[in-house]
Image (tube, rainbow, N blue to C red; front, side, top):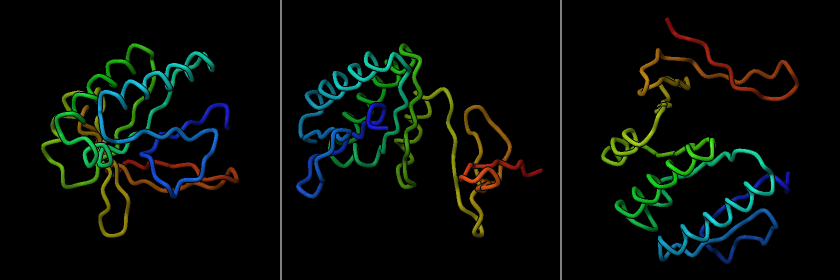
Length: 150
């Protein structure tokens, strides 16, 4: 796992140093993004496999602001497509303008909501029907199971 996993976080004195943790300053978006790209490309070359990126957009917005975050994510989406990777952007509710912009960048846009205690998932781009999300543990480990709601 240590060979394939990298976690990029904003520098904090509370974080224990681990070989799979990569820290960035969170001050200069261009400098941090350049360091991140070098780090990601090194992993790509080491594994010879497409990369999976999971990014909490809220953290980027808090550190870099809307314009720099959007610029960085747009560039990252293009690079991910070129390298045949997969990019998940996670955005909490409360950022409708950012969500609209990211929808234009994304090839697929999914929304997850909770209604009456149930976790629901549907596609905005492309449009899909509503699905109930549950955990299936029949194989001995948790796997998400999607059940279409008719």
